[in-house]
Image (cartoon, rainbow, N blue to C red):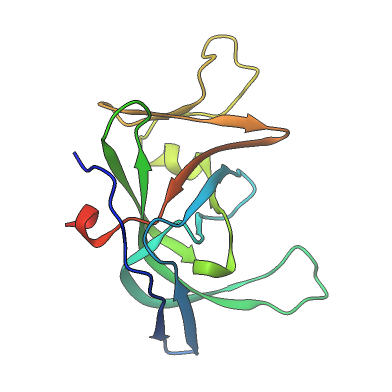
Length: 167
């Protein structure tokens, strides 16, 4: 159980080498929040400013934007962590995404593909019209991370964890 902590402001820039190019990634300071949006159109999970890097795969992906006239961007593939503070308690859950695309501070939110999460046998309910299961969220066994909807977005908030929380 982790209570509130105060992080020292710093910015980490890491050079990630691959056999095809170099990537420069700016990580957030501890405590930076952002939403995790469910996006079944995303090819994989995309990690933004609310994630920190746990490990590098030493691989990059060429990510093509929505506009075919724009060039692709090289993005590192990493294992990343975000902290979810359980409402009404002092508990914090560290959620780990393996082999996600890491955008760091370039992206103010993160994208989760719910079908990818389900493929790893983690129950996800992201359908606001499902009368059989009115509470949307991710079932982690001992914990349930509820989603909220805002317009067409299904999401939950988390933040970049501190070193203490990761330990």
